[in-house]
Image (cartoon, rainbow, N blue to C red; front, side, top):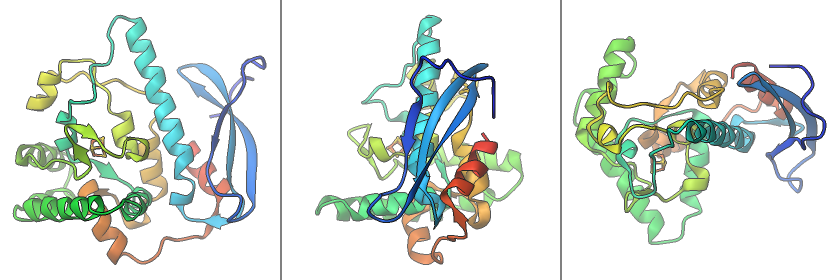
Length: 254
Ligand code: SF4
């Protein structure tokens, strides 16, 4: 994670999480090696014990940054990203999220005005009912091959993400890490068909979604459509680590 010093003439990438009105914040500097290049960061997080979701904006910012860097490199190589607003083919895939992301999405839904909030809640209920009518969720805890099949079977059900509106993400600034990191340079036709052979996905210079999952795995991962059920039924999030400790844990797993 640490590296040779970054170019001192380039301002650091500043990412922050936490509300100064809610508690003391801590700011630190870090240098990450992204694609072999040292990049300086200035990171601000809650100083005291918090839940992983309280630090999530840092990882969302990092995830978006890595996606932008990958997209820029692909474009420079003549292979621009083909993802566009209005193409929601990938938004019918099984989106894995960490418990912290489920909590954050539940807060996003809670903040929606009516009648939109009720419509989104109904879409969550419909999606869970459709998938629960199959044995698909059982396959999610199985070995990799069965899990991969579960992903394909899920897509075949055609269950749109509850946040998909007019084939565009209606919560774009708050979308999960996996959604931020999913960029393809192949034809959208392959995404619509979910043909593994045809989909060319960009590799990012790090994997924040997986790093957060691993750092937040005490409650396991879940499909996005389970976010509201999890938020309603799971015990409150653990707050046994400080913001800097969670940050260090996730960064070490990138
Ligand atoms: S959260 Fe947004 S980007 Fe992610 S699957 Fe849902 S609609 Fe698509």
